[in-house]
Image 1: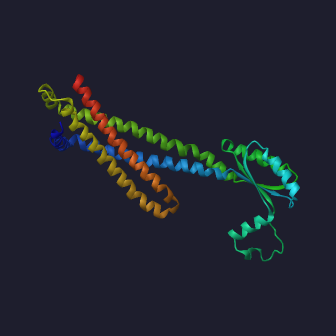
Image 2: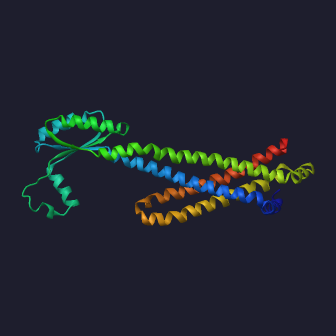
Image 3: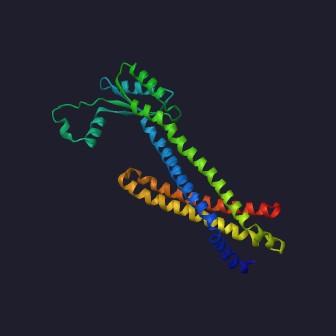
Length: 291
């Protein structure tokens, strides 16, 4: 069996060359679908990462009217901790607020102020299962109703924009990925069927001459594997070529390049293995029942 592998491998390459009129359109479509699949998977990965980062939006900062005494601060903390939507709560004293201000801004901005102008505050993180605009508004209203609190801040406008946009951000790449997967399978099946039709007489002659299923199937499976590797490989190379200048202009996307490489490798392996599997089952069906 093993001594026939070189001949069967050469036969697979000869088959690709002889039936290039069928192979080239299939290869081009596989390349295009693979590229779109890589792009949509990267968009979906970016959406998931952005969704995880969006938790920082659901944060409220409540400022005290006057610098509270320790007992008063503890009392307010205990009340706020019992809010259902609160995940974490930090008390920022006026001294801590001043130190944070100095780290972010030059001290010259405070040279006209003799005392610390920054108030003490509470930083509240909303629970993951309650992260929505309604919870932010209700929690803010409850905080404002407390006599110790003077001002409540939350990025309401950014939350509105995110909540209006996020479902499109997930739905579009998921729909494109699913559509590309269906198209790829149809292309693989149709291309292999056309290849078998063009070589039906040769396959039947080998079959009735006593050729084993492995002897007949191996060239077709190898052809499918090569088509998948070439088509998806070219798509991965093109995406990597396009991605580099984009990352140069948008350095914030640099952390997603590793994920994009993983997506490219996944699509490459998926398409190659799928092409080989479709080839195997199509030829197997032909040998059993004919086209």
